[in-house]
Amino acid sequence: DDGNYAIAFADNVTASITPKAITIGFTADDKEYDSTAVATVHDFVFDGIVAGDAMEVTATAHFAGSEVGIWPVTIDDGFTITGNDDGNYVFNFADDVEAEILYNVQHIPVGWSMTVLSLDLTAESAAAWADLGVMAFKASTMQIQRGREPDYGECFWVFNRNIKAVALQGLKRFDQPAWTTPNDEGWVMAGPPAEDYTVSEGEVVWAWNGSAFVLIRPGEKLPAGKAAWFWQ
Image (tube, rainbow, N blue to C red; front, side):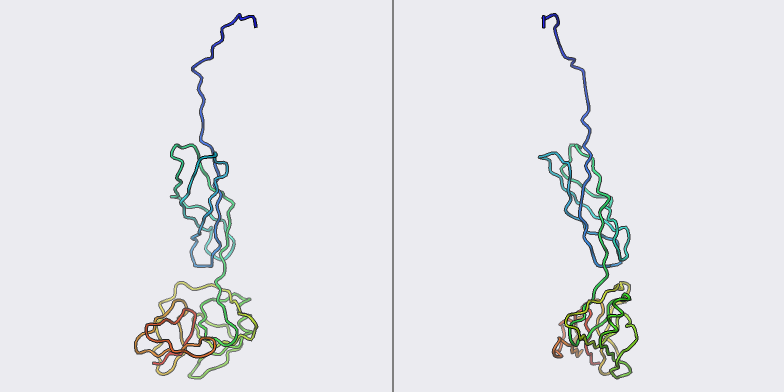
């Protein structure tokens, strides 16, 4: 207070501004089983970023497993983050994100339908199938099917007496050979279990549309999972 000192501040003091650590949150989508662990992620959240800074992420991700169930989801190496050119941030991705791999579903509509089973059914869905009215074309005759679990790719006449469609759950098979038209003589009930089939010239194909048989002409498609009558 008496002015006995002349004050000056040192001009050689330094300190470091270190990058700010940010954990990036994200959302992962559930998906139906497809035999892979590939996951879809989006809605990246940069919690704690300084106002005015903008970041974007481009990334792929994977489930911790490829079977049906709830799995942790992890971001793959090789992701890119734009907006951090000055290196002001270091990033980690959230390690608590989960998503579910679901059973594949095949719907059996109300009433009569011609169906190609495209799933290996769960025990619960096998029981639901047994409760339906099911017939198959065997030894040149239409035979009622009782007490037998359906094989993948088999064709059936199915009657669903319920007031709503039955959702069968199971696993698709992804290692099957490409479907080809049957080479039996005469009428054959058949159909593509996995992919749409384009009717070729010279084929006669009649499919059930829920109320009547309709002719599928050459160049038109028989949808995946649908059975039809083929004439060879």
